[in-house]
Image (cartoon, rainbow, N blue to C red; front, side):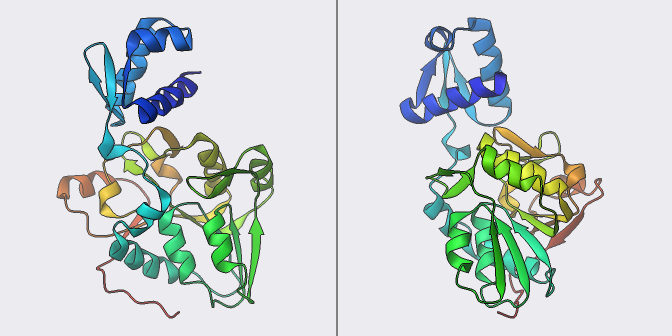
Length: 259
């Protein structure tokens, strides 16, 4: 119930830019104290800014349009994708999560031979559907139009029956307290399953994602095997993450993969 309320609050904030505790209390039929607690937690997660009697949207940490995000940090994403490409071998079965970092990787796979790709990202499906040597498996489900992805019970049930060699995942944030987080509850449910169904779980996250949190937890840091990123600017943040068992692979922006 708490997560459902938070999602509704975030939806209203995106529509109205600001909300009042009293109005939310009436609309969601819970006490004002419950709403205050929700807002406090959302502020701690970096999603909103509390104001007197309400809250406003923290524009710096909300999901942007998919096409716009695909152009953001493009060089970093291509560098990360080139490094991720080097982990894939002919005959592998891989999972590509929804998002723009995994799309950058998919672009490098168009002419790959002997590869099975499992995904729920419509842009990735459109990109790879005519690749003759790639077997494409689409999990299916309901269409989320602003992300061009599929989610829901149908896709989730299919994910529970599929196991892959490598899973590549994006994120909105990675933090030592909140773990790996993203924005949409339906999509992260499929990501949760596929992280545990990947022999090797690989997170693709440029340095701007470190120390940030979004609304929904995708996984704990302990679930990751490898994180591919660009140079982490803050030494303290890198030291915090170095305590975990996963390998941090940093690109320098000059990696190249055979395409």
